[in-house]
Length: 136
Image (cartoon, rainbow, N blue to C red):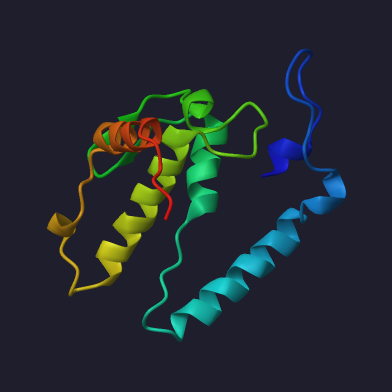
């Protein structure tokens, strides 16, 4: 999330974070190691490598998750103009990455239990959003 604390290009959304809100690389590595150690002792906890996904976004690399492919330079499709919050497509990519990690970690959870189609998921979200919510 470091990009959300750096000066924005002219005309872009100003930074949402101040540099002091972003841990140093060293501290971040220690925090991540602590989380991984905590999770390792719990059979029902799965760590989702969000940092790896964001590193690939920053590098401009293509991203592939369960047959869904975002081409090189897809950062603008997956991350909002504030450089911090995901777009709908980015939220779906994060969900797919989490579900992929969960399926990989659990023998009792078949991949067939999920619909891995990112475009179909976005369509369902937008269709649901278009319908009025009935409140009791």
